[in-house]
Image (tube, rainbow, N blue to C red; front, top):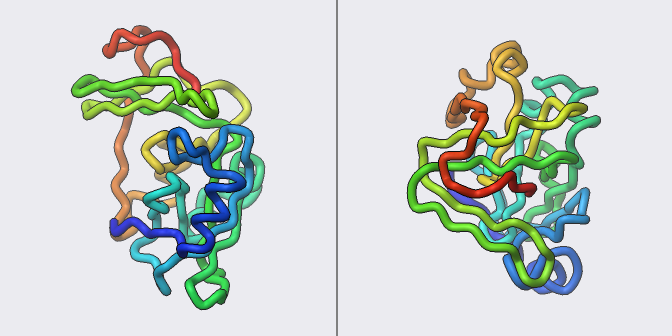
Length: 184
């Protein structure tokens, strides 16, 4: 994966509007995000915008998870290249529900003093705690990725996509990092 970057003018506008100046992630209340990238093309089928923590997905692969499910569980935004031309095969995706994938090594956690978001980092082995809430089947994660059930991923053939890494995560009853439940 080669992360993308926002075009300079668009980055300045994002800092002024939807991007938190404390943690450099989208403000928690932001849903759909449209971006203009400095690169004319995007590698792979899943990617992200480095300096803004925005997930990118090839629309056809995303829709293989189920069009109704995708539109119910994700906010999809437009992606433009540096020339202003829409990269219509790509979308930004922001989960209506977001999960923090937790780990066991090199754990750091803080609460952003500007937007109040839990900023969490840890190295694998990764896990979930607590279990995801009801009402969604596709989630955005703090790792600039997406999460779904094993059965949905298997039915869509996600693991067979070139360049896609699928991690199966355990849902634990107690966290291994010593922190309480965290919301993203």
